[in-house]
Length: 151
Length: 83
Image (tube, rainbow over all chains, first blue to last red; front, side, top):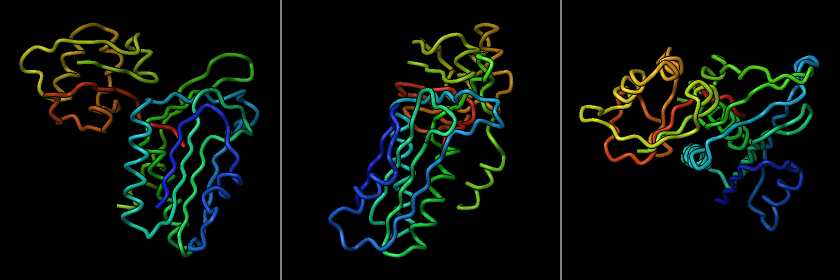
């Protein structure tokens, strides 16, 4: 299985990443792509600032990817998570899951996102339109519930 | 032992990281939190709701009862909000 995990400040091109994952291969029958974007929360936000724990962020995503690989017959996984200041409309996270068939790719992509949200060491803080720094975003119980249904 | 802090835990403690020499008897993550809280009000504030703050030992999530002997780096942070 090809595994590509990147933690980076710069943006990404989901289509180019998908092409790179599938390039030169004839065994992949399905690639599911999830891109998470920064919302402006009804015009309230000027940006989200993402803090992360260097070293652990990569290590934790590797562990999550290994769990996905144990559960589904995957042929490739790409996970890109950005840090730093991200403006509304810009991308934050990309998950690509490749398999021979769609079901494994769909499920693995969802599993990866549910686990990324609750286990990967990233924290969001709001920057408001009026120029002030807002609050740290609270973790959502619904995210914990989403992750727990995979157990 | 190196301690590192993130997000609002970092802001409340007032530093990103520090090196500490732990006394005998500080054996678990929970012991370490108790010891930190006795060091000053910034730590008391950061850990005022102990069940909320998460910990990691050498880049791996750790529960309060986890042993810290031999750890190089222990991190404290709020529940994660990435993705």
